[in-house]
Length: 290
Image 1 (spheres, rainbow, N blue to C red):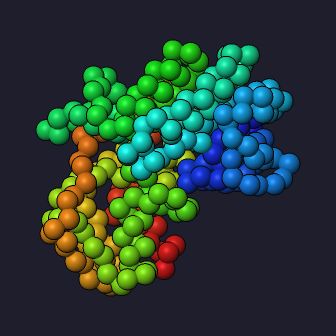
Image 2: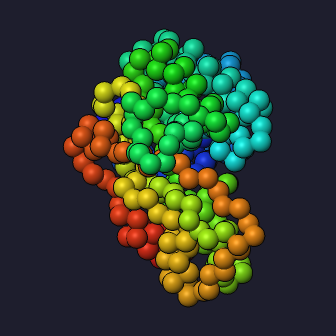
């Protein structure tokens, strides 16, 4: 793997920064692109919608692996499909067009469990499940998945659930929000009765599976952790660790629950179960905060 050249988009983002740090740790030949300001010989700052810069940078670096982590989050898509979709599509289209000259380059893309929004909750979802997403983010991601797989055959798509762990997320999920409340308010506020279920995946596990995917068969892989945890359960674990109280806001409407993702395909393909048990991952993460 030391011979391979890795290009990471969104390298200052929540997942992208973890990928960049792992590339450094493994002493790999890497290059990062982010639209936020950064300087250095192994990074560049520009928006991927700039087709000329995208084309020139990729062609100059000649990556063997391109990990595309420079996309908008679910929160940005929540009430606005048009603007984030247009930017994400133009960026992805520029990457795909450039990779036409690099058909052997492995493209890795992060999709979302929101593609499963609209499916019944009484059964789990796998990579073969017929999709009918109603959430804007799920609609966009399901389109991008097919756009990639139909136009660059050497691609791996990861459907991620709620990622938590080290690093600074611009749009925190429930875990990160609870931690923030502990630090700032000395208590955790849980909407409703906290019955919403979430499937969390540890940030470290996402990075580890990504670096195991360079030689996987092309296709879609769920990456969602092995447990289905209620918001109340997660909140109480964090509250106990931080020694703060929990307040249930019964007048607040709970967020949506998505179907449980099956992870068998990625485990079989890699021959490894790299998912850290939720309580162990949470404790490890909280210790870094303390």
